[in-house]
Image (cartoon, rainbow, N blue to C red):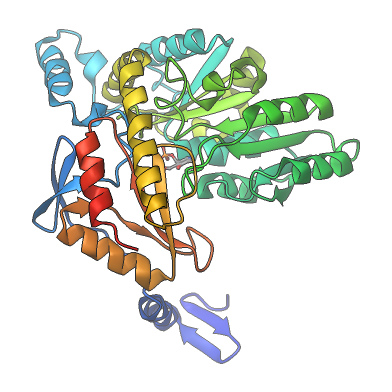
Length: 402
Ligand SMILES: Cc1ncc(COP(=O)(O)O)c(C=O)c1O
């Protein structure tokens, strides 16, 4: 960077606008130009996009709680009739460390900690805040972070901010992870392992039992992002760690409210000591305005509600297994074992064209392209929800032609 507004390149100085315009043209010519879609009303499992009502296969409302109008209206009616205006305030007006720490935070964190059987929970403004804040707070330049290669961008951004050294192990390749652990242990103050539980682009699952065994063997700290696992896996929807029986083996389990829990924000479960340390050091908790009480109250309601939604979880898994087997029999490459069902199509153009064909047939499923996924692995990603029917899945499978 040279003078304000100019970028120094190998070809001399170009005004920043020219440089940006060229980059946008390049994105456009590679069909990677992103725009905000025109999204209209949502009604149950349908969404109106570009004026057409389509079956919504691109949302993270996995349990359909966000589409439950009855639940929302009764909660809003309570809010309207309540004398406790503070409980339904739309702003917290400051950071939690100043005046933003509403009693609903305590209620929500206590409820979560009890359900997870852990000492403490800490609520964050979003999963992005959690993932960009936890590792930079806990680690220092004497530490090593080992990260699954396919972890979400928010975790990668956390690694970039952290002072620690980091290495990425091949996706779900725990032999590779063990090699890195062997090399690292003894050379660093602390080694951290970080993984998603349900991988958002491939819909496959981490082997959390193996990860817990490894972290114990090497004295590492294990952080698991259950953004796509909470609400979906485990008898009480606590995530893949509940399903695999390792809830107490994970040092920090991160869940988000913006997906199956149909709200906004995130939480981590951890020891009281780690919580206290994060409250003192985590910049994305300290230097941001707290969530509005209204959001905290709704999150408390949806978290409690999802605990009892086992039937919906079972239905969701039945939908996913039917869709996977139909698509695989039709000859598609369909990785994963969860409610996220990706169909890998290769070139960007094929994913874009198939997305358009589906739209014509009444389905909304968005193509996912590089850099979100590796080159030549563009895909359509079906994000299933418990309010779909088996007939919806059959209709979708019929339209999909290799
Ligand atoms: C695996 C994963 N972690 C974290 C996030 C970020 O969560 P939030 O949307 O609450 O910021 C997302 C997606 O949004 C995600 O897919």
